Length: 118
Image (tube, rainbow, N blue to C red):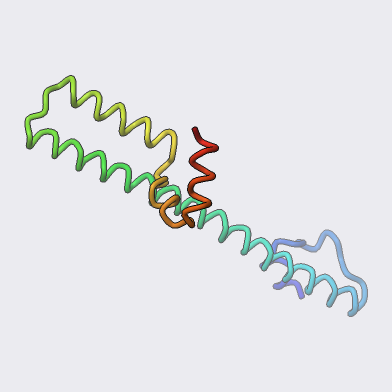
């Protein structure tokens, strides 16, 4: 009983269950809380992982653009415009590819969304 209470973070002996039924109810409640908390932690981890993946992909794309611009000896003014566009695209879409999202939708729905956006 004490080990379950301490491992699930429910109590350290300051609130005691008096009967066996109370102990069982407290153990079940603590285990339920532990499972619930684990699901919340997993979701937060999943969200943070998705953000990190998108950010890492953005960094990779930035490096690819930089290498490409250097290889073709693009003038500095055009490089600045490419960087500004890439940064604006990241700020606006956070790594989402709008063309891919719209491309997955049926044509009629795509047309309705395009009308809405214009």
